[in-house]
Length: 114
Image: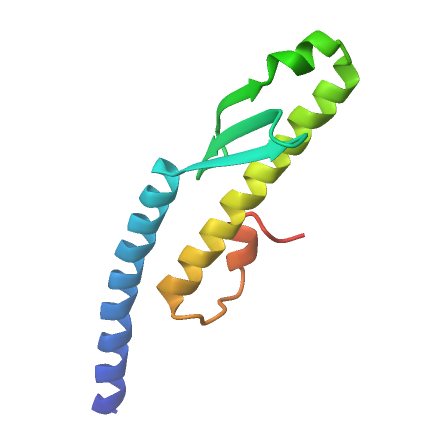
């Protein structure tokens, strides 16, 4: 009976450390910047680890061409690329945090689930 209490105490101690590690990971990701590109770099989109838009750069030559629909498509593609890079970084951080152990629900938490 008391052996189980020792295991429970160990689990609770590790849970506290895991929470601290998770908070540190979230802070690192929030401070990180991820750049996505489209059109061979003609459009660059930057987001932070929370998925918040930081900026968007469009090559002036692309604007001069005047194809608004293409610009719109490239901007959307660049932000999708940046978002994908954010998800990949979050998944990598989570794998390092958990020692590669897959935890149920983590894909959805990190924005990768369906």
